[in-house]
Length: 495
Image 1 (cartoon, rainbow, N blue to C red):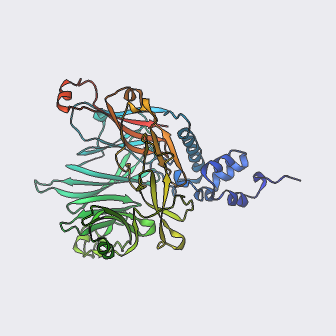
Image 2: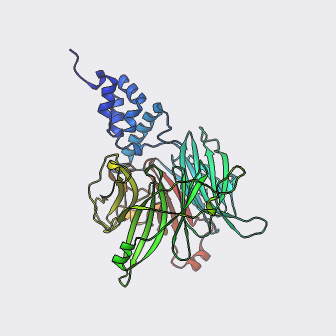
Image 3: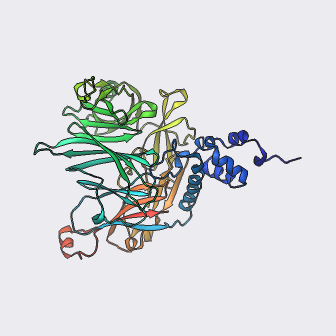
């Protein structure tokens, strides 16, 4: 009689048993025998139901819906390897890459890692450039993929099949006329070999109103919030695929204003297309008290049916010729409300936003419980720091944005005196972890350096940081500074 084991069970039973397990368990089972490896390699449902599938380190331009099933197991094995290195007692990066250094010259250079961690994007005041993350970029030898008179924001997302979409807020000047705000959508295809350069498939430009406050890109929908003089809410939602959009408006919640006797201020607009929800952020300043309520609101997304501009075959009025649609608020969450300390692990919880806990010792993750559908309940839960000591930092980042919440800065010499920890929450909201940071030697041994985290991609095991020379007397120090020594360096740490 054959002893029962996973290896001799029917494929359907193996799939059912592994459904809902984490990536490490699935990979471990797949490596126990050639038969189980084939099952794990070929049965997509095992991976799509994994509890931490959002922590899968996809390559640039890949998405979970479009990645071929046989390729997922290699990504899973890489996820296990990266996590093991990050959780080591004394983790040391595999590589320190000096991305860029500046002397006394003036320039606004914003370096960012694209999803997948294989490519770096450089945005300055006028140009956007791409560089492989395998070697130190040489800016003088590069050609911009896009140029404009002024570039303010650049958001990006993978769309599958090695392709990516960029949404750029910029201005352009034509025929000596007034600067015109524009939304530019750039469609890119990335090469199989990092020695080759990405290809620009298309660039499309659309008009924007003045005074844009926030711009986000999420699942092909661009959300724009722009400021009106009377602080009314004005926004635009635009579908990059259909090139249709809608103007939107919203009103303060009168019950909140009356209860607090406060003054309402809109702050930002984002969108969650899968939930068909807009995410609005506002603050209400209590009159005479100086205290502030921070409010997150969800509202239904109206129909996107208006073209951005006139076309030869369009019979509909353009987006700016139509009255705005008034948003219907369906959910409200106040950031200082109580929250649960135990994170839910079920896939029915869809992440909405993250923010620092009121006591500053944890990260609060706001989710929508979709058990009863998209109009379910908002649930907030906390990932706590391991110890609330002064030498630890809590990092919190948005799933729809690239940067950390708040400024994480410290003097480099502190590393030789105490532990500096990065506390973070994984993309799947399943665990909170700590990483003891190791800096490049030339940074940690320089007592004049001040470091700042610019971007964290723990899925890929990458950290982008800057080290800047700190002068107490900028005028005197700049005059005596050796120009051969960089004042500002950008580093990529790869674990």
